[in-house]
Length: 240
Image 1 (spheres, rainbow, N blue to C red):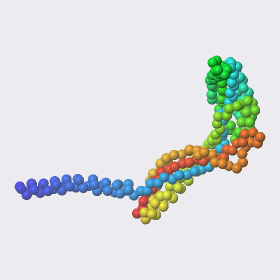
Image 2 (image 1 turned 90 degrees about the vertical axis):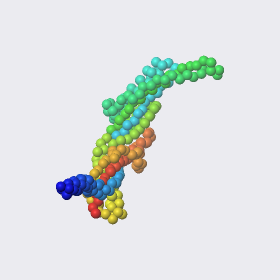
Image 3 (image 1 turned 45 degrees about the horizontal axis):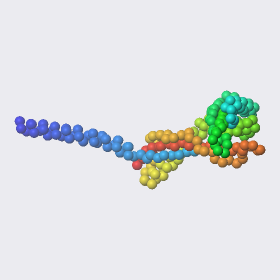
Image 4 (image 1 turned 135 degrees about the vertical axis):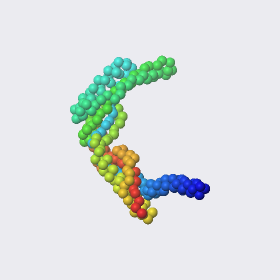
């Protein structure tokens, strides 16, 4: 009876030991597999000529009579808008972006005892030029029509999907090259791709200089080129 109890106890202990050991053994391949990878970040660029320009321009009228200043600014911006349309800008690509009035106080005499008010009225429009060759002509026409404020000019690419694709391909090649160098240093062979994460994509770099400028007797415009950047994080398996 004692021997039977002792044998039962030993078998129970062995079973308990196997329950503890087996999960550990089962985890070992997964742990080793997770460690047998190389993760790198690749970067790729693609350049293209801009095909769209955006600029904000407008008029400012100053007068001691607010009604005169307000009417003058509105009349003048209407003339500018007509000039923009005549220069080839579609009406749907012109929209009011700002209408501002502020009062300025100025001394009327040397003693500054009395003050005189002057009113500044400005009216601005945001203009999209879809024919990049007409940017200089559009600006020149607006200035000739009375525009006396120009707040900004920037270039962009309307459809940059093709550039993103090219940049993405370059980013993957860069990641593959980096991983290959690391594998060589470690004395292992690079395996298949395990995971790809796009960290960033589609961002434009500032324009780069390009020979030649649009203009001649008026605005000198240089569109240059834009660069799209894509970054990929790629994980490769290691073949030992």
